[in-house]
Image (cartoon, rainbow, N blue to C red):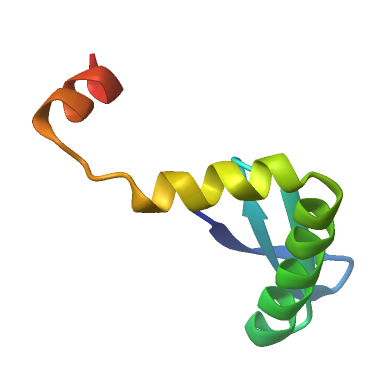
Length: 75
């Protein structure tokens, strides 16, 4: 699973935002560690609610990338 980390202004302070396009889940924190911890909690709550999506992610991790798969992804 790919995640994106970005820094944003919230009022006069900066916060870190962690998000996953695959899950459509995001969370934030005052520090990077806090943002990652909050994101993990949110992602786990999402995956507990949708166990089929968790299984899809597990299967995706086990899949080997082959030249034919690369062509399907990029073509």
